[in-house]
Image (cartoon, rainbow, N blue to C red; front, side, top):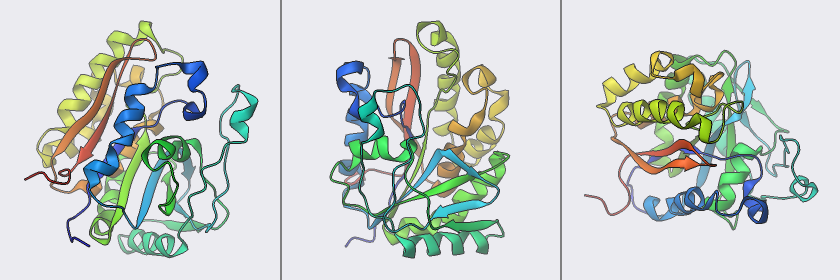
Length: 273
C-alpha cells in the first residue's frame, strides 16, 4: 500500500433518497452523481474505512458511530414508500470509532461513541454513488450542537492523522441549503454565496480558514444558509486539510432548476504531480 496521504472532501449530498428516485427526478442529479462516482478514481486506492461527517446529526459532544452493522435512518418525509425500505449495507468499524474518539479527546474536545446509531441520508445517499457495492467500512461522526465554526475546524485538525492511516474523511452537507428558497428564484442568491465559497476554499490555507470562520459575513450568507448545519461539515474538512490546496471538483449553476452548488477536494488526486 502506498503511503500517500489521502485527500479530504466536502460534498453536496443532495436531497433525501435521490439515488432511488431517478424515475421521478430525471436528469436533475446526473452531474452530481457523476462527480461522486469519480471520487474513487481521484483517491487512487480503496480506503480502509470512511469517516463521514453528516449535516444530519448533531449531539452535545462530537459523537462517533460505533455500530458494527449500522441500520438505516430514514430522516426525510414526503417521499415514495419504496424509499423507506432502501439499504446501504456497508459495515461499520468499532475500531475506527475508538480511534476517532481518542483523537478528539486528545485535542481537548468532547467526544462520545453511540453504539446504536445508523446511517442517515447524509451518508447513504452519496455513498451509494461513491462506493455502490458498500464494501468500504463507513463510520459517521456528528456535528456538535451550537455549530461553532472554530470548534469544527479544530475537530478537523484533530482528525487529520487519519489521512495517513488510509481513512477517507468526507464532510457531507450542501453548499446551498435554504429549502424555502429553492429553484430558479434562488439563482442570484446561491451564485453570490457559491462564488464567495469557491474563492474562500481555493485561497491560501491560512486565509481559507480565516474566511470560512467568518462565513456569516459572506455575500448572501444567511439567505444561502438560514441555519448552517449543511455548511459546517466543510469546516471539518478544511481543518483536516491542513496546508493542502482546495479545489472545486464539481459545480452546477442550475441544480434543481436554478441554484449553484459545488463540491471540493483538499489535496491532490492520484497521479497529480
